[in-house]
Image 1 (cartoon, rainbow, N blue to C red):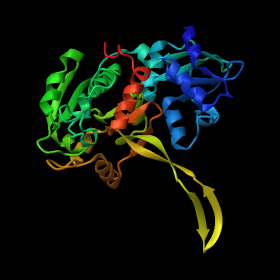
Image 2 (cartoon, rainbow, N blue to C red):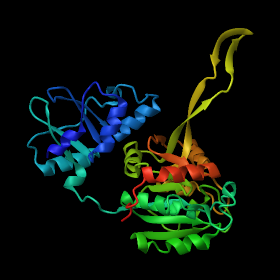
Image 3 (cartoon, rainbow, N blue to C red):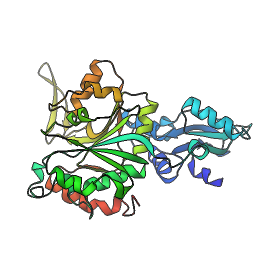
Image 4 (spheres, rainbow, N blue to C red):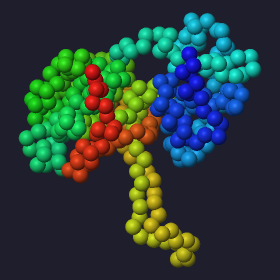
Length: 355
């Protein structure tokens, strides 16, 4: 199909251009090619996020994020052989080239397999908080049921996961739990399966994981119930699996400006002065993927937070990686955040999601 040409990217493009191509086509890959359409390399969503973690800005050359020796298929290769190759190498896409190395097509695994099938992974939504900083809004309504964009926040979260083919949900509940359970029921309205983790006492941001009754062989997606985002959950899960990670934490870049001139001193001598410098940090975004074995690290019936779980995983030598969020993200922890999220909603989310 000619549509694959939407994935083409010239070698002089910037990282921001690569992101636009990734977001504007269904293929989740950029094919970097010269004017003769000779393939120079590929860029995937994971490549972009790894580049961001390395400190590359959006104006950096896209080729700095490029994989220069991608796996390719020769034009005319049988579809079954391409599918077997992608499954063996755990690839989602393979560019097709001719004998001259020119791009002539693109094969994606889901077009050869079963697109749109529900994912087996469970999603755990943490919705047991008191929402004290949002009072008086939360005096009669639990924070996850506050309406953001004319629908409850937790409903938008569930529908966003559902748009990525997730169908199995645990919701941890404590404060005004009956209201949440009444609203979502068993999930039939959303063509999902919803179960509840009852926190008799508040268990922190990870303690409810110790209440999960079933075993699973698949990674679990975990998200705080007060975060509004359109992060690509499919790319997040793919990234986790590509990195062979045991625990993946979504992070968001946060800039902090020192309100004064910073004086750098060495042995009482002034070496330099930086006027109101800006420092950048990656902060925890409240979204995670973990392998089932990490559930064994969660203590029973006591408060326990996600940073503690990641700390234990690191102590045990388990691979833990960061997934930088470049999509819209906001934590609705204060009244100002709530109003800002309501103002942002219509421009970020489609009202038809989940239909």
